Image 1 (cartoon, one colour):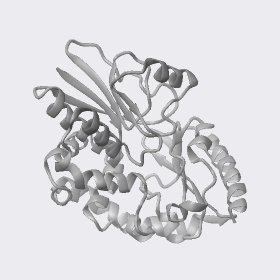
Image 2 (cartoon, one colour):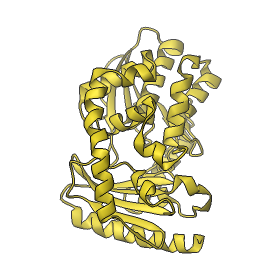
Image 3 (cartoon, one colour):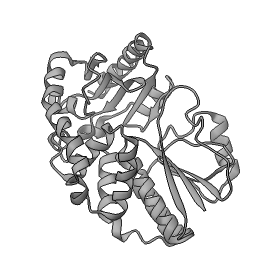
Length: 325
């Protein structure tokens, strides 16, 4: 049996979920299975185009990513509120009652949700991955002790979070997933391929903070910034809160390979006052995410549209922030 694992690309939780699922499958389903991993990205159009292929002894899995009604999807685990891109998809999931499709929008991370369900439903022993699961849950839930911890990334897991979010080398993505299955986080972070990739990102940190000091604007509780012309910069979603700790929300524009991105978030260190649902708001523009954080992706040549959408999103969030006090 060959298992084709579709996972949320450039995401620590997504890579961890892919690693955990393959370990579970070997342990409890088929010890002789082989695996391939396909990174999935949110964006306009059919995000599953080409993801499902036909072949003998082939099973498809999707973790930490949207639902697909394709009958070839054998296993599915997700926790995003925006998992269903249409009412028809949601209705299909509910009516199918597939024994291997699992969804819980209240789960903080897909990694812990997947591990918990595989343990309770199928007897998966995840004890060897307890530290990895705990960090994935903390990272995806943005439960950092402080903005400084999230931005400075001193711990190995946070260095790897930063690395995986920016790595675009397909071969290294596969190596990282393999390492997650066999190595401790400190050992992975010390690998030369991670050290080589992380060094310029850590150097960029000061440049990002300088850019945000110059461009970010806090108005009525919402920080906005436009870094579309700074494609070389990898901007931490937590950096604005490091500079503006009292901000309620952040709306940022940036350029990524193949897309223009609107990043939208709420202050994870003041989560008790959040009233806006970010996933729902981003969903109006074809994006999605979690109630506390999300994004909208457009084509590279749709910068003007992205700026309009970002302005509209910021307006909605300013109204929410004013009511939150």
